[in-house]
Length: 248
Image (cartoon, rainbow, N blue to C red; front, side, top):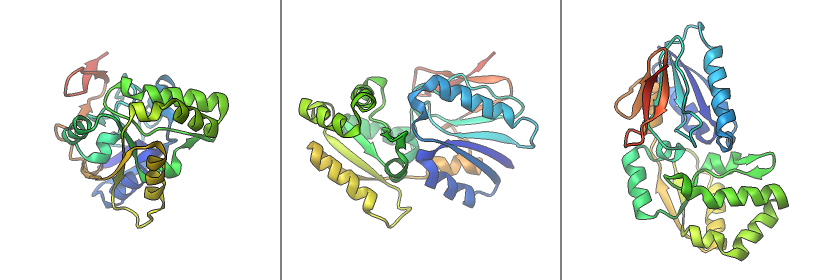
């Protein structure tokens, strides 16, 4: 098969590695990390990209995205199938399954997540972009407040204000660094560890799993993926399936 992959920079290493090892021809386009902060704009951009590759000989379009703040809700398949992981956000893709994400969330709901690409690429217009805090939108309230402070006062002042108010400590108690074993560089892990110490959080290294991304790029689309047929659009399922197919 010839596949077109659209994905987020947060998954860069995973996607490029899986594309290189896929038995199929995979053309990859990644978008700047943090675009999910404006879901409507990201949705329109992704749909425009999907529309633009019509008639270019692809057998399917695959999305290295989760629901991502509803940014992918409403995406419509055009002339070929559109494949999307059943995931709330990229943390599920880092951990390898919805079940494992649920287990981690139940074990420690106040978790602030880190990954290598997030730390290295997680700045947009000079502002830090959060990877994700948990399974529900409410879990990101403090991240929204932090971003508002960054916009108004700059990152250093925003950090200071959040720490003086104790906001980070009240909302989070664990920093989890997702280790995908794709690099021997410990610099980014140490950065996450130092930030956890500064904010008074427990630090934990969590093993990542590339299985969902590998399956996505290998064409192994089992129950963990939604395959939209031409003319179908992605809807929100409001159950464990997370997303569903809808007819226009």
